[in-house]
Length: 212
Image 1 (spheres, rainbow, N blue to C red):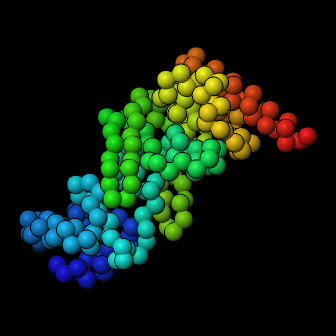
Image 2: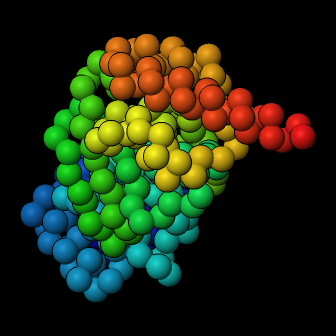
Image 3: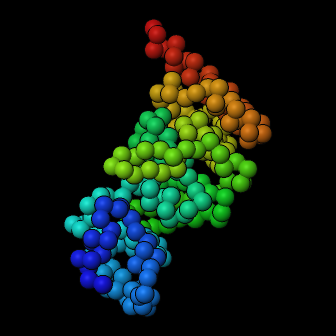
C-alpha cells in the first residue's frame, strides 16, 4: 500500500487501527513493516500496539485527548481532574489525561500526551456518558458529580476539607446535588458521604455569595 492510499482510506478519522489495513487478502507481515516505515519516517504516530494517528501535516482532524484516552484503554472513561477541568469545576488541568478503569492501573506516554489510568472496582464504574467533543468526536466521560467523587475516593484523605480547598472548586452551580447524593450512596463509604456533605455546603456558600 502507498501512503496516498492510506490517506484516502483514513479520510477524516482522527485515529486508526492496524486491523483496518489487514482486512482482505493482504500480507500481515508486509502491512506491519509498512506501518513501521511510515512511523520511522514521521508520517504516522504510534500510540500503542495497533493504534495510530496521522502525523502533522497529514492529519485532517487532530484527535481529542479524551478520544485518545478511550481508545488506548477500551474499558475506561475520562474522570477525576481531567473531567472536572472539562466541565469548568476546577482551573485548567493539562498535565495528563486521567481515566478510570476496572483493569490494572498504568500510565501511557504517547506522542500525543500522557494518559493515566486509575483502578476502580467494577461496581463503581458508573455515572459516565458519551460526550460530544466537537468535530464529530465523542468519548466516555464521567458526569461532573461522579468525576469529583472518583477523585475523592482515589485520593488518600480526599474527604479532608483542606484537600477540597486545594482543588479550588468553582462553578458549583453546575453540579446536580441530588445526583451527587445518589452517586455518594453508591460508593457506600463514610469517606464519600462526608465529602458529599461538605461539597453541598460549599455549593450553598457559593450560591449565597453570588446573591450578595
